[in-house]
Length: 74
Image (cartoon, rainbow, N blue to C red; front, side):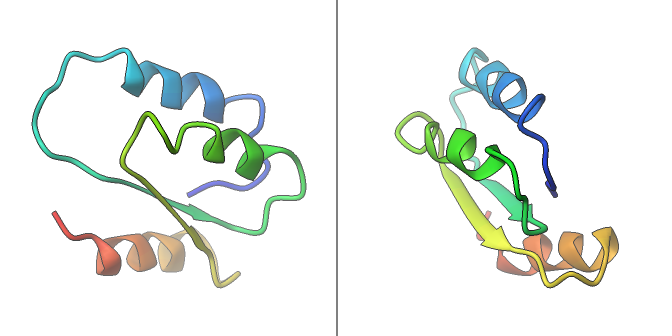
């Protein structure tokens, strides 16, 4: 779950890129309508990571976690 995380999201995603894990995984980011560069930073990693970005419903972090969990394919 993200909301205006431009200062941290790039470092977090880069740390995943740098890992040596070779199994299957997906990264689902539920964004709570960020108004900064969070989405731009996330989309810059689309070619490096199995990312999906979904809009949150504005009902809080628990509801956004459920959204992510419900669409997870792995």
